[in-house]
Amino acid sequence: MAKGLFTQGMCVLFRKPVEIAALQKQLKDFLCVGQHESMDDDDAPQTLVYQYAPKSNGHLLVTPANSPWPDDMGDPDESPERFVAWSLGQYSPLAFPGCLERAAEQSWGWEDGGEHVKEHTSHVRLLISYVLGVDDVNEQDDDLPLLPEEYDPLKELQFLSKAVATLLEMPDAICYFNPGGEVLRDADGLRHGMNYAWSHELPPLDMWTNVRLFRATEKWSLMDTVGNGQFDLPDIEAVYRTEDFEPSDIEGFLRSASLYMLQSEEQVEDGDTAEGPGEINWMAMECIDALSDPPRPTIRWIPENDDSPPAELMDRGSIPANEAHDSQEGHFLDDEDSEDEFSDDEFSEGEFTDDAYMDNDIDDDELDIDYPS
Image 1: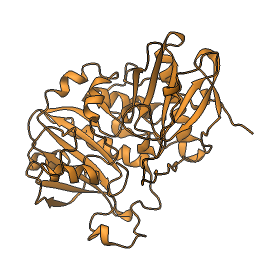
Image 2 (image 1 turned 180 degrees about the horizontal axis):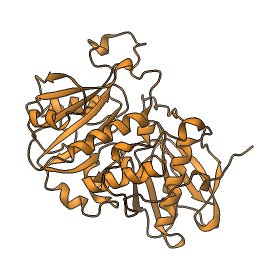
Image 3 (image 1 turned 90 degrees about the vertical axis):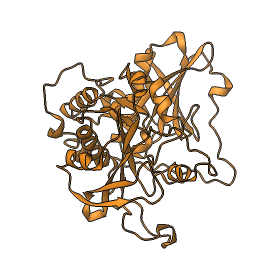
């Protein structure tokens, strides 16, 4: 799924269904501007509409559902409502079927997350949209902008995170789930991670995106990020011989590479190199599709040593027939913006401790990329 009618999405999983009145009371510090009644979804009949960016017609949509998170799209004949909702991005614009299962299997930042997810019976979805109130969007002129000129994905994620943190204070809330980033965190983990990032003036990448580890072959491993599409950037992959590198070093490299792309005006392209784990150069490959779900463009890093990865790990993917591949245009931060973009007192309640769920103390200067002439 791609950004369109909705630009960002998050979710909170609950042990019991949440009444709309209780939800509205919990979000009292957010400006509610309306309520939408659904005629098609019996499990999620109402949506609260909150003001987000009024000058851009931006809104936060909060939808409580009296059913577990649907981790598949359903069948267009047997469950057409769910299938259409998935297709339109109503379960998060970047969500891909199986996202909750994958998040539970790769919940390294919250080790018990996979077990706690099994407790949920209902969920609340949170979405950002700029087309609310536009009648018959599909029939409008092709020039109808789905994103405003001043579109800022980081501010969207920051706003959504505040709303999610507020909902996690409710008695039956289990955890935060980011479908596009395939991340799970409990209330303490999310707050500590956000505090750590704000105090270091960094984006909380590990609260919005996940790093996953796979044994690709008997001798080779794959580690990747999932969720960089929320920033309109490609995800990062690293392919390496398992015995040659420590997973923590690869993880730090992927986080640093993601932060570099987010804050640099330079784009990483095919053939670029950077010093990485093992104190050796790693070479970048631009790939149309990732080696693992969800399907998405990536930058794949390969160590420049004497070992050549198997052919299947060098496959760049291909564009499906009759489909145009969405281009990834980065929304980069100006230097002057990056100085104070990530300071936020809203998450500073309580004592900050260094055991927050921040994977690494990332410094974008750690990644020095050499561009081919």
